[in-house]
Length: 216
Length: 297
Image (cartoon, helix red, strand yellow):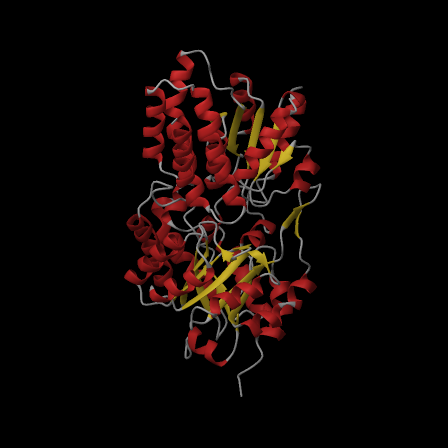
């Protein structure tokens, strides 16, 4: 029976049906299931399947966004109950994210924030046109492991480099994994500026962050 | 103007221009500033870029209004100046045009999503584009160019909004990625579907720009051509941006390699050909002999 429920939750996430995902999560809570198992066998494999469909070119942005929303709707039901039972889901990591100073573009950044959250990260989204100091101050304040920087313009991505310089000046460079993204960014760029990684899209951003989190 | 731009395209391929933003930055546009503000603050600089493109051989240039929708301008606190900035831009391009030179009113994406992914309704997008189109048409644009669109619904809203306020022909270019199943926008709109729906929506020309380099774009032009009888626009990127250690930006496709594929773009059916990111007047000058081949016999 519970295997059926896990399957239904997976399917609701893959279908991007947030109403059904939340209903099923409530059913799981109501029937007293092991909620950690619900997450491990339901929501997480669901969102992983969505990532695969995206990488295969079967899913596009609308599907990705809907599925991330369905995932979040289910977790919004499950997380508070888990917290009360002190059997918290393990946070994949804490990330501070924003579009860099001088740049107002936020579509890609919003999507990465959403997918990171769906992927189990605690995400602090600072919005767009974020001053360099704010990234660092926020990361310090919330105890983040990741600082994620978006830039859509070739003129503003220079600030991704500046932020890394600022971290060095403040003696904080090794405390954070700095991830960069945005249309003009590349793996080569990340390497050139001494970032910890680059992801081409929101799905690979989650993979990258998880891989780096695993390495501590 | 004796001959309309569409009539000209019946006789021969038409040469458009290349990038605007990078040209303005090279002339001192500050980082983060909306380029559209220079239509009123530094009009002589914008006009000089247009003049460079006309001198390089462009039949038509695009106005400095890519980010000129009221929704996009609102991000810079300029939302209520959309009409003024767009009209000024079209007048500027018009003033820089030699006899026989045309002006295309550029209308890029709002940068926001429609519901359910975003907060906006199609009506709100339609109204925003209508406002921009009104400014461009009043300023003397010969055609409107909805360009670099990644959401067919947004492009259709723009088309509807523009056609509501002006009889000026509307061209629409979408930006596609190459996937195993063909050319798709990030929203999942395939090339053939875009061409068919935009034609049904009353576009005067459809096309593809940005993202793809000139070689990759050949297939996209073909895919559009299989789905529409409208003239096709092609404005390729010079590959991908590469940022040097000192912050200078170059693009991965050389001028020579870019131009090498232009004859194949024409062969594939492109009627309006220009450049996008990474291209400048030198590219246009080098493309001219392959595009403007004189009136057909």
